Image (cartoon, rainbow, N blue to C red; front, side):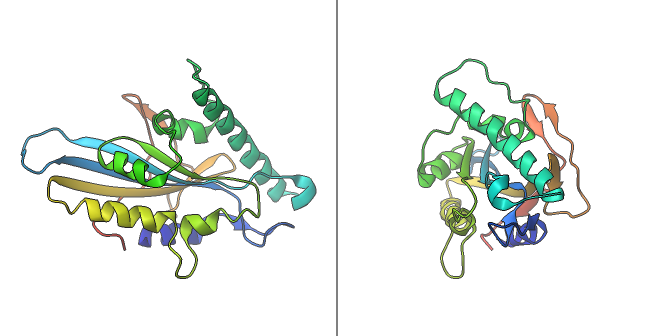
Length: 225
């Protein structure tokens, strides 16, 4: 939660005609889980990823009255969402080939997109704890209050807290040992920025053994706070 709050302080937001604090970037809070059987000293290590996706709302210039830099931001927001929508549509229709290279957003998520079809969060977190990749989206047009259920407001728990509380109780079972890290990035105007390290901006993606890698800071965590 501390890492999330730190990242939210420097995420790109700005006022438009539709929203006083409009999100101008997509963000991915990624939890990286390494687990192994507690009774096997040299047993296999399983690595899985849980992506918490907070996507910027799709833009209509006629309603936002965006101009200048806001207009450029809106065009890039719509571009990413359009490509992501096409990828998800093709996945759901069982197409054999999907080009992830059209968007930085879809390339980053290509590992997990093919595995996610459920709409309920809890089974996804259970699967994540067992070593499967998963992604949870908050997505929609402006003024749909996506960020409130995702990040929480006042005393109401959001997805992020509920997910953290859920896996926090599971990793204390004693049957497995876990190493947990988290990263937090934003995609702003097609550039990838590290929200946990203000000096680490304009990140470059690279591929290694089928995975998409970023040199983003990964903080080791051992409790929900």
